[in-house]
Length: 149
Image 1: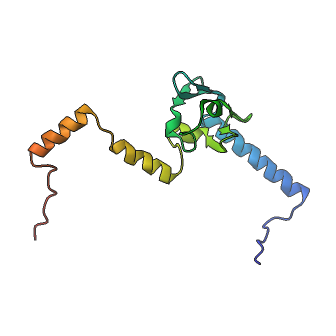
Image 2: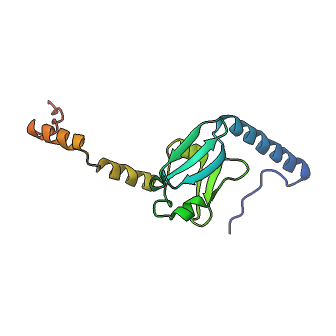
């Protein structure tokens, strides 16, 4: 068994210094990161709606978020914020998201986000179908420039 060596002795003075550093970091993040003041599920619009501390409102459909896609309206409505407003939590689904990550468009793990992107690329629309047909008439995708030796 390997034990980590503590770089500071566990005494009251060191503990107080670490608490002060943690509080300073919290204040720094509080000033720059988005924080939520409320969250709720709008069943009619099928949106999770988050009101931010700065007055902005952020919303997203549950199908985008890992762990929420197949949740019932009752489960989606059972959402809460911690006092810090730094995250949202669905107890019955065991799902948590940080507010900064959601606002940045991160709705799950890298694998989940990759799958969302793959599915999005498969979306068919009239415009996409028309563009693909026109491109096909022109001979398909342009060839990359050949390497000249």
